[in-house]
Image (cartoon, rainbow, N blue to C red; front, side, top):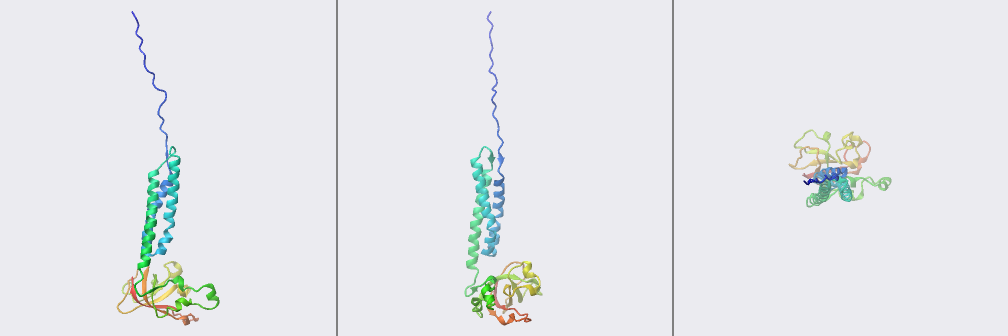
Length: 238
């Protein structure tokens, strides 16, 4: 009688190893920056200058996302998160382009026909002008009696009503430097506004776009005068 020998295949000693891949931190940071870049559009609605102040957010998002995406692709066996990094890169690029574009559109269309744009920054004399006692820049002084357009904020303590306001002090910004002691506000950072005719404004903490006839009175720089150097007979407010 012959004995049959049964042979069994031995189990394979090599097992598939699942390698852990870490989610790249830069991908997450880039996505967060991409989402925060949406503030570009909010800032652009105020002014081009505001959108440019927020621009570092999407720029940083682009850099972080690009670096993370490059690292993930180069070391794919160690890192994951390429779709997240790509989403952050796309969002940052989109909001940067859209924000600057929208801000540029606002800048080029916000000045009504017949008005000349001025800014509080241009009302400040240079050091050379101050040394020569030219306390109102000549290009601003030349606009006396002309229709100008300027942006600023209503100083709260210059008004007694919150609606239907006819007179107020327009200031450069809404920081404490302008909302503090009236005597500490530089004369070139404020403008007395009088709304003419039936025109009025309602108070808000946002920026105001004001147009009207500019009055420049350097004599009000005399000690004890207390009157505004710059005033505006406004017939446009937005």
